[in-house]
Length: 258
Length: 72
Image 1 (cartoon, one colour):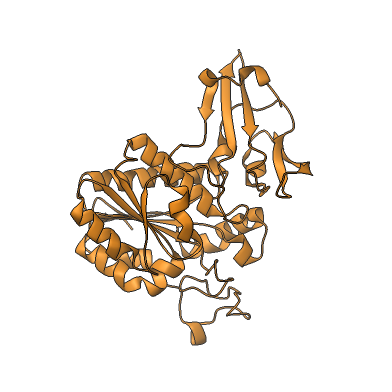
Image 2 (image 1 turned 90 degrees about the horizontal axis):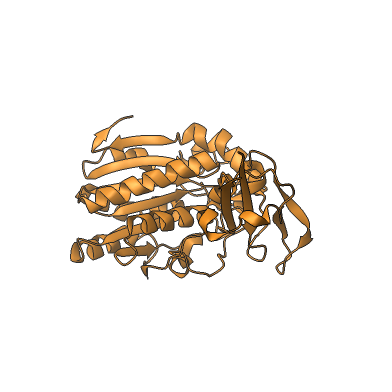
């Protein structure tokens, strides 16, 4: 260990938040889910809303999210997290209900629930983790899979004739009047993580002020599904995913900015 | 006066993904030749150039890095 003499409580700059439990996450090494869990937990800690936060866990890789967040949680049926979050938030209007969903959950089986919850302008926070693939079930094509991208069910690459176009659900939701804040972030570099954390904070602040639906898409790698090392996967994401899914705010304070 | 930092890595929780290695501006971190209980080559500090910027901790998916910083 280097510089052991400065390892004292008064010199502490950063430590793992207590809003995450001590459970070791089951995610693959380098998976963005862990980082996203951590920054959500940090925002909850900074805002002091641990006793008011309610996590709705999806189906997919993050199905066990309730084991990692040290807040009240509920597991939803596949894709139905926004519907359950709507009910809980209506019953507890001063709590902070958020859903944590992947692209297979939110943009495939749960498209209907997502669109209607956003269109009703439910006062919930939706965290949408987009890695362009069904990670948990073995890397099948998802609605968000890029054209030409090879997956278990598109071994020659996704083609328009057979599989249609990648679904840009975030842009779609920004057109709905119920959404107040729609943004797309990523977590592959320290700067991107800080920006993503700021966006999540903004979403929870909007919820506190009863502004309507806040939707935060976060681009993440799926190194197992993409058959790459974590570092290569992050690079691939920057070069390919970000060309199609451009990061940045899409709707701020109810007004489209892009 | 110089700013010095130090990191403490929970090596048993580290999965050796090496995302922190590229995030460090001073190339302080590298993967160890040794493995932890799960068989991962865990990350470790290899020199004392750490400035306590916490970039490594920011990108660590498993939150295993604790960062300290002091003016000496």
